[in-house]
Length: 309
Image (tube, rainbow, N blue to C red):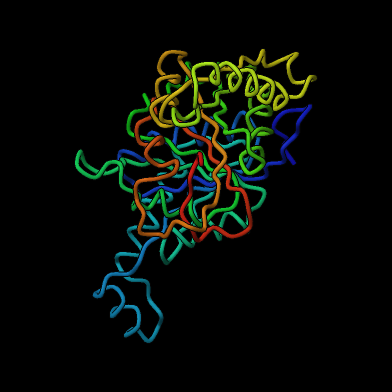
């Protein structure tokens, strides 16, 4: 079974590329194919759909259980899409799923575990681009493993330029967020990348000007402990502490430091309902100029997520 990072190995059997055949999916497909080849994993190209009323009536009313034209056309399109991309093992495998993609894609990934889901998102239009409600967001809510999301601001990855040269691991230094650290280190070792570790201090945490220095030194020590000593030999970690809103500071760091991959640990927040559509990782995914690798922190994920308290 392929391993990401020799020193901090993370097993990975399959890459699940979830596509809806949109332009947003095409950008993610490049990452899925390259990662599958470099990590030598299976590549499964999956599409989930629901039958139209006409197609449902045609299939239910058929004595010979014939496939509807909708199903046939989707199978052809999915097969063509899958075979257009190289895989780490053999040919890419097309898998057509019937049902809500937010639910059936994570189920498929669990069946092919350990798996990494890769998907793209357009993030909505200019009015609702920061709203949590897309298929991509739904998949992230339901999947308990790692997922790489390619947002609308990510430049297309070219075959001769694909690389993760600098990885940003953003954390609040909590135990809930710490589960994402091994992924940042493992990807850094595999791709020969440098790692930036960032913590954002909220302004209200600074009760007095002298307090900022104390908080800064505290977080520097905590951040240094996140990256194990043996990992520092190959990922050249740099620690950063900034003051402000987490989303703004993370996006600013990505731009200023030319980050190629952002790694976030998703924290489940049971106090936030599904209707709260303005918190968590998705606004960052939509606005980030690099792909975002998210790792959820527990076995059940029905609630909303906050990155920072």
